[in-house]
Length: 414
Image (cartoon, rainbow, N blue to C red; front, side):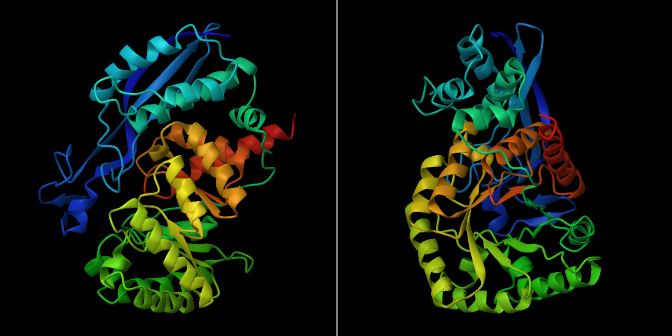
């Protein structure tokens, strides 16, 4: 089966592009947006509408496979590619990527995906935008699956020699700024990992001595114990702090580790993960400091897992963080890795190294990219997968949970 055509359409994502640097330096909320001027190149506002490009691959027999090019909420920060705007990148797909695909045989996902993922911009010599590689390779996976009359997860398992999961993979839900009401939604729907919490500002979200987050973790633990209808429901508490703990404690490891011990007590008996405790604005330094924090937490027997996020953006980064034990778990932030072949390889590598694999992503994705990511997860079995897109809990959880259970149901019939 060959590719007959490639068609693009512009679209909206499930959230927004936010200028993280402007927010970290004190941009104030004004309703649902922010007051102030952006500081990251490409942004016209601190918060602006998220955009995507749907890439549709038309097969010889008329079937249409598709994937969505999307970029993370905090584009341009933490070593990531710049803002992804549909009008800027549709011509790249039509003029440079489409000619490479039309007429190609759909016999191997891996081969085609790696070819697209390695494409470079003829003007800069750099690899094309991660969002392009992300969406086009999603469409390729779908196209190969349709050509072979398989599920996407079956194509992955066949080509990468993995075992498809026969049970649900824990789903991690994110609350956005609605820390309390959205936590209730998660608990009612028995989300296995929660609530993300968006702790991205020291004074208003963490507390200058960490007191705001400490109080919230205690409240969250008590809320789980109060609302749960089954004592076997003991979700993992996973808080993303966007480097604010490092800011509050001046990256002093002794003080941070002491604070983690306080958080552990507040969360007990529930397990606690802290994502992105520090952000030192450099990959190698980030690996060094996270490795030191992780080592200290282990030595002091503090039951808090450290999760790496910032500066862990590519498959090469994932390997470096894993090799240096820079965290107990790594977020594999799917749009940042470009081609989904890198997401597959990253999950496999983390498992081989005995480090936690969190197949994440961003609230700023689409329903389609979320569905494809479920197939990747079912074929490679990371420790948890993000409910996405959006920050409303219900929608992202529904999309990911339902796709996962469709796969499980269909697999039982084969």
